[in-house]
Amino acid sequence: MSPRVDVSGPPLVRIEGVTRRFGPVVAVDRVSLDIPENAFYALLGPSGCGKTTLLRMIAGFEQPDEGRILLDGEDMTRVPPNRRPVNMVFQSYAVFPHMTVWKNVAYGLEVTGVPQGEIRRRVEEALALVRLEGMEARRPHQLSGGQKQRVALARALVKRPRLLLLDEPLSALDRKLREDMQMELVRLRHEVGITFLLVTHDQDEALSMADRIAVMNAGRVLQVADPRTLYEQPRTRFVAEFIGTANLFEGRVVARCDGTVRVRMEDLGEVRLPAESVGNGTHLRLALRPEKWRVDPERPPAADLAVAARLVEMAYHGDTSRLHLEAGGRRLVAVVHNARRGGDPRLVPGARVWLGLAVADLVVLED
Image (tube, rainbow, N blue to C red; front, side, top):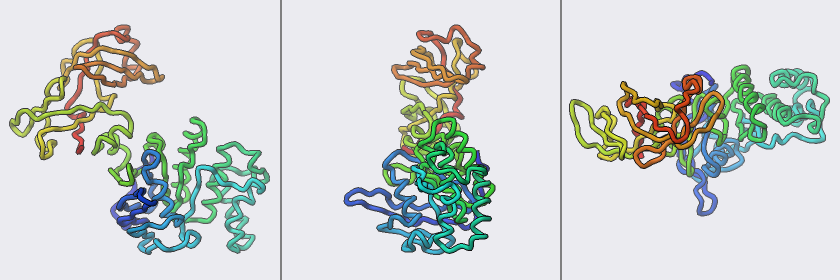
């Protein structure tokens, strides 16, 4: 994961109340965001949530119907794409098939009249950054998917943009190569010292690469935070379910006592929560991450709430196992580390087990 960046200074990019409509469809709905300088920032959300449309407005390929976009305090809303200090890397690579790697990377400098000596130096630097030295004479059909993506990155970096836009750049790669390229992009961001803005629908990709993430749905930004906060403290049901997996519970406040409230969690039992955790109403929605359960064949003595359950099925994932359970008339999901489980022969489908939780691991959602 990238280290957190300082967000206290003026942002590199400021998006103010931006809306974009396509006929009756509101693709981006009154979005406001600040993107810090030198950040690795991600727009995360499902297909059709508006993230790519927002990226294209920052690049200048789309115009907002309302609001404005500022870069370094200058209004870029009506500035054409070729006059913005921004470059974009596309999902499809968009490398020129008839050109060598060298010519692909040099092309943007050549068409703007950069002297040949400067072009040579900058292309060599860009190819070294993406680790493509020795491949200058190859053509795209001689490259792997990962190498083509590196060419696209070098072509963007050679122009030295203030902001690099990445539109799902790794989605066409296989899993191992995608993970390798994720770490390469994090390394590149630190080495070149520019701001990266990534659009992705892949939660793992955003969590592992970005130091700040804006989660979008239906054209709106639902939460902006660092990866750990988004995962550990989601504000809404959508964020809790979209980032990872969450067990969701309906709760009802049944009593108040000494700065706490007693909350009945459906048919599972009661817990005490700090009174400030409760909103204006008496009905709550609570979330618990699957790995927060303690799963044991014996009743856990130290749990704030212990629930009897039946293990329905278990999926093995190498270092972890995902358990599907029934308790209180509902289905629950737990994740256990296999080293901790130790191959306990009692944890098999059909077994009766106990689920324990700590109140500190419950998250009160806003919706």
